[in-house]
Image (cartoon, rainbow, N blue to C red):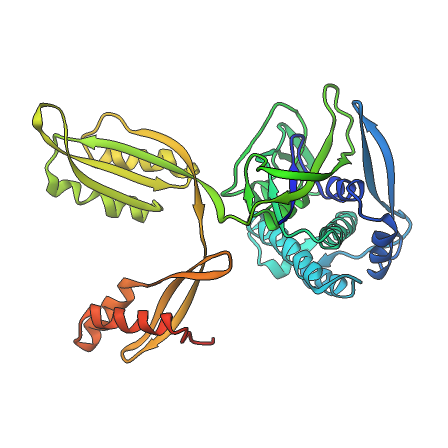
Length: 396
């Protein structure tokens, strides 16, 4: 499987991504044709070889004529621009998806609806070029899978249209939810919103480089010159094993309670689930001195680990909670609906290598319908499961 690995040891931005893919073999003339098809006045692109601390890299730049008046653009205007690009439909769809991610993050930061978010003149042009050309380059290379290293965002502050902001910028921080990243030790912005959105939209997983036969290596230069390292994005292109399911980082909390009334323990699980635990397991175990105890395991997002620990301390008599992070494979999943004689039921569908491998009706919906119709939850569940196995999903 032809795989692109983004080695973001010094961060990632839109221009670094385009530069790295040019360095890896994408023809600048092709990207110039794509850029021209966007019909943006007062904008041109440049790609030059530069040296960054002993590494030769390609520096990609979007040059904007300061005398050309550029309007503020909303998401709908940018989508219209992308739709006219001379690229494949997949490249257009991916470009729009990246911009939508940025718009959603900005909307959340500013407390506005997505349709009211506007992209400032210069920033919008930079982002349009970076995002469309990155996707054009990606699909021209025939890449089948993208993997990315954990990101390093940098530290300190960054100046933007709304003033001085912390690094990572608020929109970038939102884009990086649920993926592994660290601040690092460089006092500047290393991951831009565009770079974060590209990585999140493209990458099947954020992990160390997998076993792969590398055919091409490319380096994209960042705009800054750092005193002690090469400010570049490195990409590897080669063949890797068949696509594996996505991975994610999960926090695992554990404790064992042997001195508490089990009736009171029953209050713990709903409290944890209410506050966002992914799953809670409570199992009887035998501990020292022959006593029976209850072993509690909680799965949660890493950012919620301490919140879950406080709930455990509040609802139990334990004096200690163990916590560690694990990587786990997660199948792609979709929520679909089927019809039963008693009403519609949601079904969770899992996919392995794009093949449907698991279906599971939502039990609570089955129970609610059963109570309404004076039948059994088992009857509703089995009817929903049978419809799902036959592929009789509702088209909505």
